[in-house]
View 1 (tube, rainbow, N blue to C red):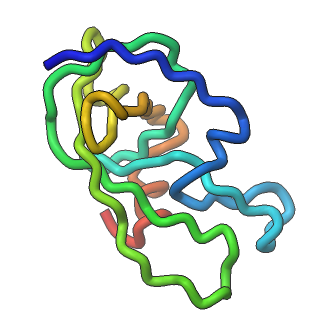
View 2 (cartoon, rainbow, N blue to C red):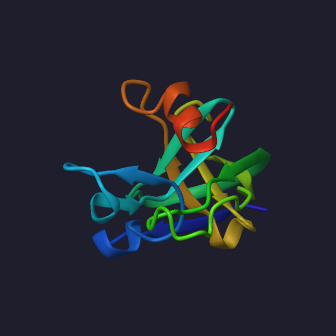
Length: 127
């Protein structure tokens, strides 16, 4: 089954769900949650991708829990597992669609200059 999806992520929507990344000055108020998943040892980040076509399932991607309020006692949550789908016309090494089904899949991309295995280690504590 192939689904053509249009994804428009406004700045506020990008701050939803997942991996916590520190911003400028540090501290709890400088952290925000970005849409990021780990797949095949890489960190893929959600983008405003326009139209994309979801292809076949290629595996499982993990989305870390968002801890945008450190030291509040809610740590230890497990990563969410999502289905990783091929994006038609793109290599899985650079782009995936991830979600619980092809219909809710979100476009994520990998940039080797920014999102290598060290980023995955920071988000998950391991690969």
